[in-house]
Image (cartoon, rainbow, N blue to C red):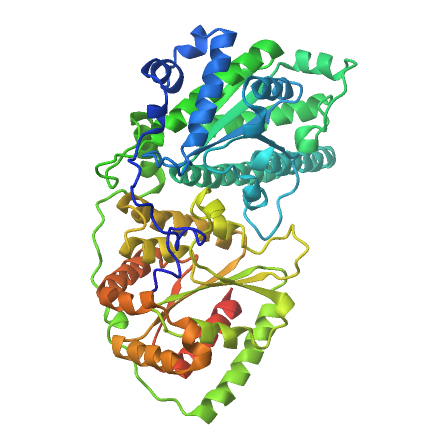
Length: 577
């Protein structure tokens, strides 16, 4: 696997010559005086209650520019680029707009991004978070996001509950005097929407944890007012923005249902900051204090040890949060490489007849095209990985041959661009998924190299520290499970050849003019790291072969057999999905 095909450097920086004198690394905080660091950059819970307006404003601006400086390239810093995403949700007329307006007045408004959505039904064939991924802040930025994925979730749940209430009212009128057990059976829809809410909250908790682990920290603020204050504000003369969640806030029954759903949400997720919006001015000040604390904490957790970046450099608060999360969702046992299976070393070496190959190929391509077109809107994601020159490109070419080019997208994944490095690792793959919200008709995505680069090339080449690539196995499994949960078919292929066959294919590329572009110096260099890549592949297959997204290992030196095996597996998976 060539370093130039996928590494952790941006394409537009790889060929730049290094300056003669490297500037020494320094912490972002080194740019400020000791007094500024103590008073404005270090988290202090007491400051929530003790800072006056002017002091708060100064601390906000200081923290804002310090956070932005974490992504600076000159001078290089020991801080990991880190962003802050502020989720704003809660009751209508609870002072959300006033609070964000004040925040924007107290910081540099050019550096504060604000996005807003209202609740919509989540799209059938994609995770609830996917509609919002393009709104993610870059590392170094602070972004406030009204509505977000919680607006979509609440929209869905409130309407599920409302539909149940309507059904229950009709049923209770028709069943008066009947068997009580029959009336109790009508409670099942309540359990259904509550189960849906709880499951979605678990999935969002996992998604948000992975965001935070990849340097997009979160602050979740829930604004609340009592019913009487809400009704007074609804009746005043001030113009109202479009309401979140698209519900009738003046309807007592609807409001009661919203509060019931909100209470469930807040009980299940303990990381919400609840802001009392009865006094909008105080709520705004409270909100600004919370944003300051979140920025300061993000700065503290962005620090990287200049001596040993493989050591855990999180703050104590982050460690406690990770420990709680890991007990619930992850396995934090010490990483132990697996024994390399014979499947990756004892490579099949047949010699398939060319005429037989073409006959089988045509039949299988026709069958696969029929299955892909009969999937009824479900998305399909193909992921190809393998050793250099193992035949990924040839397999993809035969895979798409019977399809209309408008039906699919092929993504040839290489080194990330600079703007992609300023987002969570998986972000550049999230944004390439089939998306119901675009005008593009294709619902098939084919990845030549994938999100597995973190546990393959970035691991072997030392482009990701141990904590990053070891954490990535679980992150990838959760990502793929989210896709499978909404019906996406995830088809993953590892193409294996032996070292002798790779050499022959390299030499063939070198001697064939129209193939020479495929061969690079890094391809030759990486042959010296063959054993490292085989071990990384073995660990990857052992840790990410899941029921939601199993691996298909195609281990053969015969290109024709490999292409047919890929088609056979895809046909089988689509027939059984």
